[in-house]
Length: 418
Image (cartoon, rainbow, N blue to C red; front, side):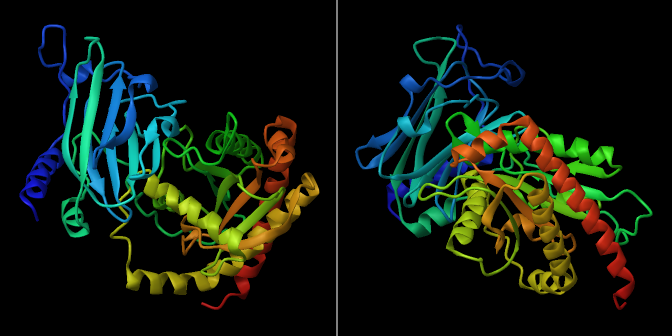
């Protein structure tokens, strides 16, 4: 390691050790944390992510100082900024990014009271300097960070999320005691998972965002199900980011009898329309399904999660055993939903039943499906998804499907060997 890299790493470790509190006032005194919690707004005209010689420089001009922190993660290499709190709504990330050293950028809410800016790097880079200072406007502030190329080994040694007081992503939920398989003697518990949210808006078509649309539909579907006497839990009920594994944990904590993730995809090439219902499989039904699952899982990476410690061989074996019973139940649920949507809307994809390796479907003990209600890239589907009467019909079709599946599933229970 060169002396430059060593100095950069030491500075970075100091950044990791604590929350960096911005300081600014007309008199030059330090602002107390509680005085810096109002929403700040970035100025796109005075912000950029661009080359600075051989280095990369991030400049973010804000309407006011806010508490912030910075760190890096690996696989892929990412630079993460957290703020309490910055409104990135409509902030043109692509327009301010002008560097081949950047593979992708994302920004938005990540947990209550916090926003996140994620810069995916095209290669390992060491954070050399970072600071927030008042600009020409005493009420505003300018964040500047500079990174230099480094070796993969040095980068890997320096990554990690700091333990910051007040910053917590949703924890994995406590596992509830196992409920008996539903027999009609209690309300059926349905976990609805509106896809994406917060820093991850999902597919976009003009001003229409998948995350917003699916939250609207989930709230409408919840009302329909509750009127039928079912108990419903949502993995999110606002525009917030929820990690994929946490979504499953929320369902398990609620003792869910089934898990349904709601989405509306968009494709860049070709034409596709209609609803599709997915179940879990190690082998995707087709290349499009495989790419869709990769995009969904990649959202967690772009949101800045560290997934490097998720591999557990023993857990995988136990999951496989548990899913010997769950998989056919998931298949039956998916088939019922296809029939329900066919009867209520008639708007199905040419292949309405597919499978892929979606992480959000990996609860070994809960029948789970992922419903793509349509494609935002299709003008016809987009119009239907934005239509309240159409969504009402879709909700009724799904609700009827759940009722039919639950009754058939309960009838199979006595046949199981214990």
